[in-house]
Image (tube, rainbow, N blue to C red):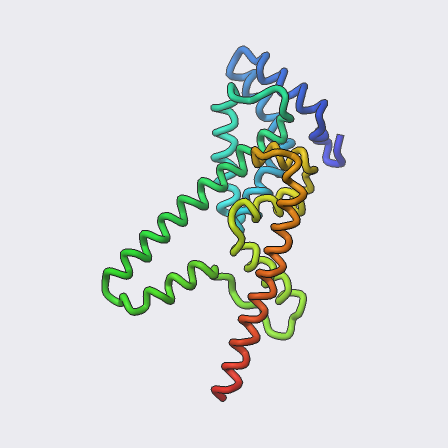
Length: 222
């Protein structure tokens, strides 16, 4: 048991939880079985969703969607997988679906702006969307500035690279479980992580170079 008296999300818990869900014969029994599952896994699912979507509010919303999906699609669960890993995969896929849906909506809004009044400003709208709308860190606070650079660079990564970094570094999953969540071969995880971290470093360097260039332009204008 953990310090707050919740069960530990280990393989034994997963096996017992799957047995309880499948053995449930009534709505009340199913409710009790799933409540026990999500007492353990909902905080981790919500954390993954919030970090992936960069929003606590969206994270809670998509986590709820993932819980509904997991319950309604439990017949697709493969006993060879860990229940926790499967729930992470359902959550991650729900996040990807939300990101892609929002991207399509944003692109439609930009395309409408291009054809309507104020079309000359459409390029700046598109640039803001690509670069993200994170507020600039407070000047002179190096730690906040560094964190903001990393977060902005993370936003610029493709979905696969962002996902593998979050699963490894934010959720602390081992390679095998990351492979199951992403639906890829375990042997590719190490190389994918290496490439994702390299891309993140390049992104941070690019963002810092952009900021230095903006600072230089500002100095010349004074």
